[in-house]
Amino acid sequence: MTKPIIIAGAGPVGLMMALACKFYGLDFVLLEEDDSFSSDTKAGTILTRTVEACRRYGRDADVLARALRLDEIGELERATNQRRTSVRLDLLADQTRFPFVLNLPQHHFEPVLAQGLTGPHADVRLNHRVTGFSQTGDGVSVTADGPDGPVRIEGSYLIACDGGQSQIRARLGVEVEGQTLDVKYMLIDVKADLDVQNPRDYPYLAYFSDPEEWMILIRQPHCWRFLYPLEPGVDSVAPAELEAKVRRFVGDVGGLELLNTIVYRVHHRVATHWREHRVFLAGDAAHLITPMWALGMNTGVLDALNLPWRLAWVQRGWAEDALLDGYEREQRPLAVHGSGEMAEAARKLMGGEVTASGIESSSEWALAMTRSLLGVRLDVDGRNDWSIVCKGPQPVQPGSRMPDLPLFDGNGRRIHLHDLCDDSFVALHFTDARRKPRLPDDLPGLKNLVVSNWDAPLESGLRPRALLDVGGKLFAALGCARDTVVLLRPDDHVAAILPLAPDAVHDTYRAILRGG
Image: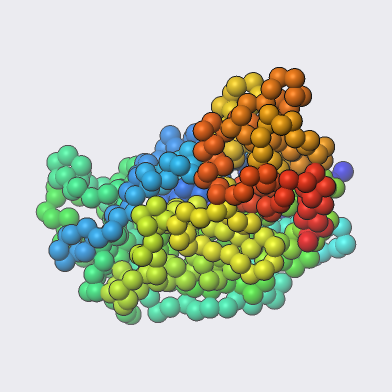
């Protein structure tokens, strides 16, 4: 019997990891030291790529029902109230089923995720604080203090999602590179009617830049949220001063009520390595990122898209242990030089320290791809060729996220591309279905499908394995050559682009599973 995967920490990333384990049919034990899920005022914006992760792991409907959708991220000059370039998320309709981002506070988001952690694979234990662990050749042994005393849990792997002050990371002796800035932010949740009685025609997520005092205004489902920097040396602000600050920004509004406040430091710190044999770091335990442009929590969710399918393939016996090394190789650069540096540039831009963040010259479409995290390209083949900034439409490359366009299967049903690779590698053979191309046999964890703008003839024998690309829209969007195979991974990223040769697909897939 396979030992469960142990996940330490039930924040958003730990919950996503647990949902992923459930999705892949992996037993897991989720340990959280608090006796309830988060009640703190924390992250409040869910980017498009995170919504896609929610779909994969079965929580999108409930999350969408509780969140505010927004198709514009506004950027304004505070002094003049004039709009700068806004991020138009409606331009992503050619890429995703979710051409928007969501506003939903973390303490509302976490319970929605947790509601999905039921069933035979799930073991969720609140009020369990990890106190130690040890590793063997075939597993990990974790000790925790529970409500009834110490417990020992035997597992196959340990995923540390225990936050920026991770005790697991400290016990591993893993160092952290980067800095904690002498900068603090104040976040305020306010109840006020800025929609009807005191209407403010701002986007639901608006960044007001100003060298004296920038501000971020977020319309949450049940309140308005303000975020701004504190003066150096200031650790707290009296309620009356907070209220006065809000009124200076939105004017003299009636019925204003302060709900929650929190002060936090600004970090750009990343662990030097993320895997120690059978222990992995994820989320804030692996990377603390400046909380700007919603890149903190959402970068952690990228970890929960990358690691779980690898664990599933290894535990099913389809892949070798070396496949797990790709997690750190692909995700760490995104945190160090991708999300981290982009968030820092955004912080400096808001305060007038710089005049550009480095992505303003991109097209509106490319800007939306970047800010939604749909433009991430991973280093899938170890060449250190990756990107988080989308420069514009270009031919698909290894590491690119595949657009989630609709196709039609052999029975005429509409199906989205990401549905095909939810729990499988998929080799898409772009060729003329009328010519009756020979597809290689499927392998465990690998499906082969032909994609054509010509419907596969009934007598071809290909209909069960054929997808109709009406108008050749997917083929045109990818920009690849005809008679090409695009190999997709279970996280929607392109693993390889190959010639139309049956043996090439099998050889490449087996090499990936060996960690090559």
